[in-house]
Image 1 (cartoon, chains in turn blue, red):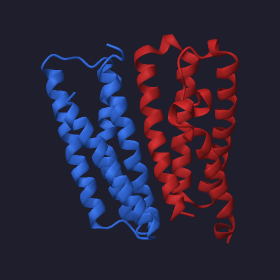
Image 2: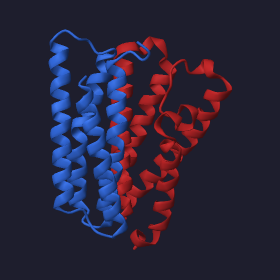
Image 3: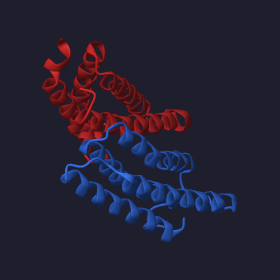
Image 4: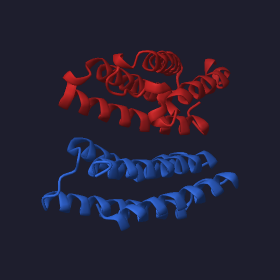
Length: 121
Length: 129
């Protein structure tokens, strides 16, 4: 797995989480900046997925292939899910949804990395 | 019911439905013999999360009743499995969603049904009409 992309997705996601938290505290619904942020995050996650799949095809094996694939698919679906739900809920609670999903993404990224490498090797 | 905090609840439930379903599905498909009880329990948890999600999302009378039952089952499940997994770890050779009171998932499985029940209680009067 590409360490730079792993770090980038985690940082992007946390920045967006903080930004949506600020929006929540200002009692505002998610706006275009959040949707743009989710789009950028999705692009970074797709890049991460692409490099992972490329090295998988290139011969590297994830430590737990099935789990890895599951996490990867889930991860790709998260930003669109947040976007759709945020559009459905144009209140401060929409901003909460974006915050929650953006806090879940780093957890899944870390788990994804763990299933790629055998811990302690 | 089906707005504001309720939608956030639905969003978190969707996440848990996805997480529990994919995990249980994979475990049952690839290594069922290793820990059948744990994996079946995870599958049961997954079904409960899915049904609760649908119930909360519908938000009508039937949906609410379904959600109340599911949240109660979740709460009892996470407490019972959590206690059992600490008292007799041999029962669960591999973790379930509810092991260690949901510790593997940041204790959200423990908090989620409580929030669900509180939210259902708070919005009770709005729907009965």
